[in-house]
Length: 195
Image 1 (cartoon, rainbow, N blue to C red):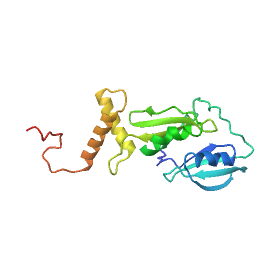
Image 2 (image 1 turned 45 degrees about the horizontal axis):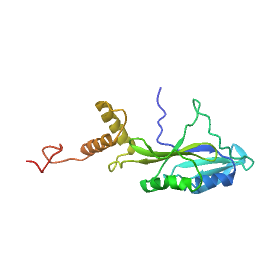
Image 3 (image 1 turned 180 degrees about the horizontal axis):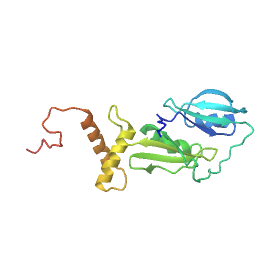
């Protein structure tokens, strides 16, 4: 038996209501350009909208103008999608609550997740959406996932409950030490003000 190795998310498809409402949310609120549209090839009476979330991947929405938005929160049962999280810059994150409130949208307020900040709100269809902003930048050539895996190991070794800034900083230092050579006798921390 062998794995079927995936290499990332190709796309996520959601069931929307009307076309205009879907465009207004995904592009008009979240800034994802509508890049193309065609019929749903499995149900030609529906339209299939394709949005670019900013990383070249796709968010797609099946639309039918006969369907009305239903803002009731989606059920949280095994196998259900709990929420979708989208990356935003620190500058955008700082404006998120204000921009949601300008639309009259209730939200969670800023949540400190240790390695990122989050804010949650519901789309017009009841789907929980998270805007997430990492609290760190990975070293050149490393991914956020690589830093988080390293920080996780550091956290566990220290017996801490969750990843915090100190784990992230130490993880970045460890990754940098592995990736970059040095001619110095020691790569340890030093205090040149005390000799």
